[in-house]
Image (cartoon, one colour):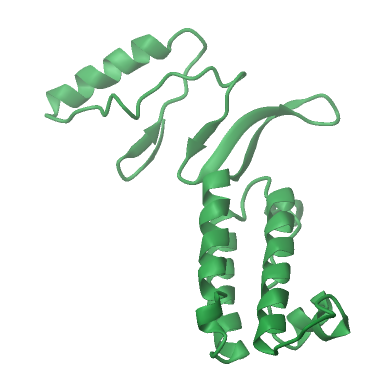
Length: 178
């Protein structure tokens, strides 16, 4: 059983899900609690992924042929992060100083990456970094009223990170550092 606040995930051997659900329901009723039937489901983990606390967990095969639980930020969590970055870089923020906008974006990126850092996040983090770099580049381009050359040296990735101090998402899994 994996639990956080009022969310829980119960893992059991194949074919025992219905029995476990029944036992859980009885246990909760004895404590005058109720199982949310709409959110409760039995999943064959070999065939479906599970989304729990913003993570997507699925059973995958490694290149060596061994199976492992693959844990990464869910698409819903990634969309919320992109929406947050988009909100910080709308046309209404063009009058703000770049340092202020980059600070706000960095705070969001840092918090998001700290939460999702432990798992198989490399591919998702790389995609998010690419999105953020392009979003910040377009924001600067519009702020400075440029008409061409959005991807020139003036707004290259190196400058975004060195001069504007855009946060670099960790692109290597935490467990590889150990």
